[in-house]
Length: 307
Image 1 (cartoon, helix red, strand yellow):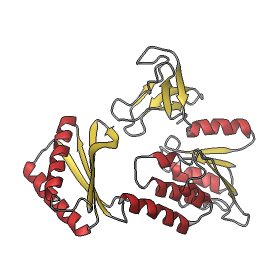
Image 2 (image 1 turned 30 degrees about the horizontal axis):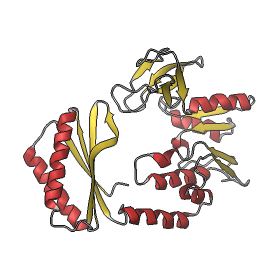
Image 3 (image 1 turned 180 degrees about the vertical axis):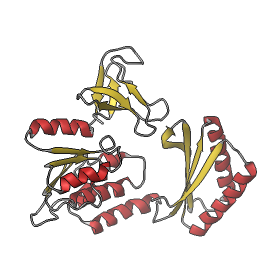
Image 4 (image 1 turned 45 degrees about the horizontal axis):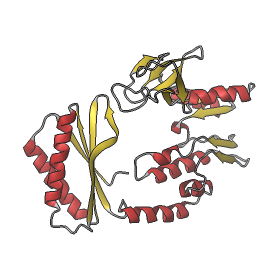
């Protein structure tokens, strides 16, 4: 898209998808004008409003950086360059990914702009410069693996430069240049990242220091999801009541990072324990109780040591 958020500068309202708990992204049309707002989760679209739907103000502004905006700025800076853009908009058709990659691989494009899809597994010997914009965004997602995933993305992206005979250069744009995942990725230092990350995992009892089960509770009926989440919470506490509080922790029930997608309400419970067999027993116990409860309005999934 062109911008990540469309917001009212008068009341602060952010235009959101009516079916998902996410903001709508602004997209340009073929003539270069921002005309549509799209949800990148369910595909919902609507026209760009000239007034705020909350307060009626016409102080509607675009915030955040999308690939379309990057393409526009690069076109101004390097008018002679042949620029290719690879994202969800340009790869919709059959073979869209390979078509763009093939053009770039043949040297028929000078600059390739893309989302995360361009950083993994591609070999372009002629690439000598990689720029990573807003590298710390992924550090702020509600996930204990945020630093690990940031490190993975940065090292993968950096690995696209200098794969031929000419040395490569990587420029990382970040507001947190002191963060260990940024520093170790810049140095391609896997050992130092592991050592720093494991301090955090052990301190907060996250895998692989402890074992963990993530329980997903999904339903079109929010009240039904809340009832099931409360039921599971009681069952978990009953099963672990004889365990030492030092051996286990529970987070939740709470809304998932994105609380609603395609009109499905999403709740989560995390259970951490220092013994793998205990969590295996807990999972079997909960599955049996869920079957006996037999609530057709709710879907439940278990994710062991989510990676």
